[in-house]
Image (cartoon, rainbow, N blue to C red):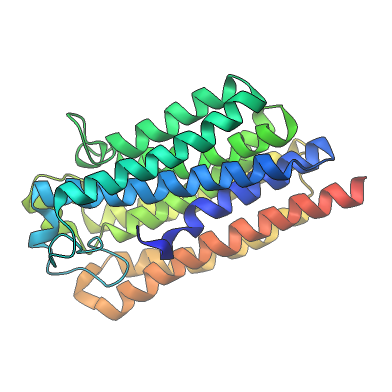
Length: 297
């Protein structure tokens, strides 16, 4: 399930819930707990099913450049700890737990929960499995950005406030691009294995130089979205400061991408910086929303 990466699903729910609290002036704790449970289970299920998909495609078996524990999957199947069918059952069971939590939310909050749930589970499954396999056709990065950014942030905000709009969408974009950047940079050490087995991720398609540019532009677009939100009056200007400062780390990580796995220590640091950017940025946005809620009350 790779729990070390669970902040990528926990933090968007925290940020979205904080935004919803800021808008509504009240907090629905049961809805927050159910949303958190559902999102983490979808994330865990997607990770497990991704291992199944990568094993069936041969990617993980051929991956000799992985950077443990960040890239190359859990290796449970390759190490004989679990069978592919056992992993598939575990992934489906995790999605089933998420569905139960979603059903409770559906009953208490209404039909909108269903659409959020269908979108999230569909992206989790189609990322690795089925006839589409979004990760293999260059759409995996976009799907992860939506599934672990826009959907959980706006969904959690809606659960707390009952409203959606351009402001919360702009608020979700930095979280979305930060998690997309995690996937993008994690795919860099896997280029040889992915390309050799037909898993044509974005780094496989465009190479190290273009991946470096795309990586930094992702971070830049997140800051731009927050600046736009600030100009609209959705957040104060000071809320943009920390995400803007994080561009320094993003630039350093982007520079490391240019050499890729040839410089393994630099690549490892770049991955860790990317995880740090997501964590620091998401916690900052959560705190900003809470502070704004208290000071505007």
